[in-house]
Length: 465
Ligand code: PMP
Image (cartoon, rainbow, N blue to C red; front, side):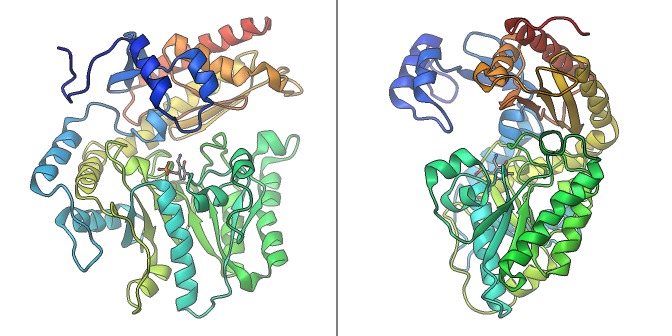
């Protein structure tokens, strides 16, 4: 056939690449570089594997973009979307209307979320969820008559999205450089990145030190002016930064001491990534708000939102006056139907318990063996997310010269070996689908090892294990 089942033409790789280069502007992409290399075209997927237009089968170690938690090819999710689209493909919830899938999803999210999180505001994405957080927190402080609490504190190297406000809230230096000073009530503190910032320090001592940066920033800003602190339970795009055990309890204590709202960005950690429904549960965090997206639908359709805990929910859910905020696709019926099917599958198939008790611990053990490779200074993981740090010298943990682009080389080697791993500088990160088998974990680690060998030999590094 000359068309796919979805009515899209079938072309060869070269033709797709030419069309792509001519017409398609990609997110976070250097188009000069992409034009030289030619885009990789992914045509289909099944389980934990994606297939490109050259017929390569590739183990998707990143779950798409940290979202395909249930893996590809789930007929139940497809059926839920199709059935909902036939019944009611779209309606809004602005003008005192609602529809069954959004109401039912709100109820079900209240069941799987921690105690007290029984209200939700929907968005189309994680970025919109974090923009919503900013406005919702403002609204809360206005309603409780502390309108001067306007400052948000976030972390350097955090990722909270790409809209103007979410990008300012995030701490990605290259994004700030292109954006300039846009939103002026956001402050940043350093991250709890032990490998990168705490070399030689006891991890728990380092964790406390980094948490106390929050107290210092609050004091400096004036506690009466601080609205909220926002952070990912485990920082994802910043390089899978797993904080020391001492970090979150101290952050929690500081937020309580200064009466500052705590926002846990669960866009990556939510829906099972760390072996609990939410990362906050795994790390013992008790936030006031939880923005989410990605895993709520396993990425099959776009959906995000903010789960609202008791403190803010009691005020926003009762008080009069309008919250002037919302999106056309807030609570899109088909996306909500897919989310319901996704949550049903996560529950009925015990996917999250399996991450916690079986495949997660197995992954941790196998992934840790990568630390024996001559190129690896550290291999760390939690649940089904992990990172390895590429170093020139295993003893001093010195990095390679930036110009060598070692992370990029390793990523390319992984692709050639049939594995998607992402490079964040010289950190290699993975977050595979939660449904992967022990055997597939073995395949991931073996392919990663071989890719490290190829990277090492391209650099002239030899010896070691
Ligand atoms: N928060 C976190 C923690 C994320 O990882 C992301 C996306 N990677 C976002 C927010 C933004 O989500 P989206 O791309 O859906 O806007």
